[in-house]
Amino acid sequence: MKNFTIFTAYVLVIFAGLWHHEMWRDELQAWNLVLHTVNLIDVFSNTRYEGHPVLWFYVIWPLAQLTSSPVAIQGINLIMAAVTAYLIVFKSPFRDFEKILILSGYYFLYEYSVISRNYMIGVMLLLLIASLWHKKDAALVLSGVLILLLFQTNAFMAAIAAAISLVLLLRLSRQGKLETSQSKAFMCIITAGAALFVFTTRTPHDSSYASTWHVTFDPGRCSAVLGNVFKGLFPLSDFTRNFWEGYHLIQNNHFHAIAGILLCAIVYFLFRKSVYSSVFIVAAFGFIMGLMYLKIIGQPRHYGHFSMALLFAYWIGYDQVPVYAKRFLWVIFSVQMVQGVFAYTVDLQYPFSNGKEVAEYINQRYDPKVQVAGAYNNLSTTVAGYLGRDIYLLNDKRFSNYVIWKQKFWNPDLFFISDSVLLKRFLTMVNTKKSNLLLMEKGAGQSLLTKMKEGQSFILLQNRMFYRVTCLKIFRGAIVSDEDYLLVTVTPP
Image (cartoon, rainbow, N blue to C red; front, side, top):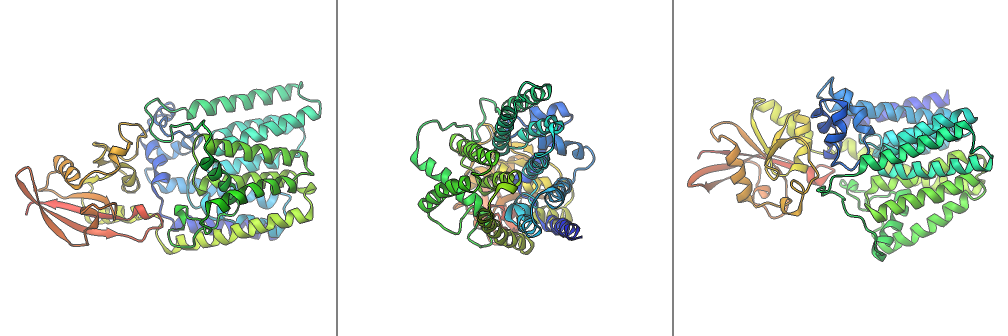
């Protein structure tokens, strides 16, 4: 009965969180992409600039054939969160209070459950593998299939998948079973998973997002990566409305790095009595840190994979973890619970993004055929997704509802464009005698347009013609600060 209560309460809390959560651009980028994808074969070609494995896109693509509402991906994320909670509550070796601490933690209560991206699917698969860990050899091939899928969730879970593969091979070797038919099938499957990951994440030569490999020694980068270990296990924000923007409570990079080194040593010490947990945690932390150093330093949502690796190691070696070690892990889980409860309640109080409100404002007051343009592609994705149609992206000079991460459309020259150029492009694509709307990020840079007040207007001379530029509405107060917006219209004077 206790387990059922914990499970039901968690699912209801996540349902409420998703219901109140306004999705932001990264959530809607994936959805908008699959809406433009005709068939499963095109999923890969249309996502080749994303730099992500393709499993998440394949999971949400069928939904895009049934509905254009982005709420569909929140439904999928809720199901995956529920499956994950089921595994923790009913299949894990954890005590009841541990289950509550884990499910109330930042990553399970908020970051991977309320925000619908390709993270919860990875956590679900990870814990499915954990639930099979102590099964007999019959589960080996199934574990291989799950690892193959785990490789296809995101790059950081792929690093964890590689660590799991290494430990399972070690276990087979210690048991003298490397030559069995099941072991050979397992090795073929995980090799295919790793190869598929490399194939699906390799972006075209003109990709412009996270396309650089860092192969030279950089002490500052090493320090940042070590600091990510600390921030991933103790994800304490600055406890403000904009907590999600990556500001840690302790603003000292040297402290982060030193704490990260100590935590790596402590975590290994905690699991040292379990061969497989200790080897896994060293491999997983090492692979994640290597990925961060070589490719992308990451954000708090990425740092969370250190915590997911810690949880997996704790699960598979639970009976061999001494009481004092468990108490230290309870401290980590408790700190994460504090941040989780804070983040969840702030999301209930404030809009995560104002994109949904902007779209509702437009739909309620304007004809569906109103001419809409967005100043910048990445900042317009959210509004376009909730509108359910393409808008004109002024820096791209194309109609779309998603970003293409290629040099032509995503480069420093397109990040900040002058008011005169933006308005010139806007006037080129709209008929000012009809309703038109220009979407701008509120407060960006020193732009006159983004500094306008609601109801304010000015006269613009463009191509020997006078136009009145009016700020219709301002949308502010979002948790993601660069998804505060203002709407502008241009009419004859």
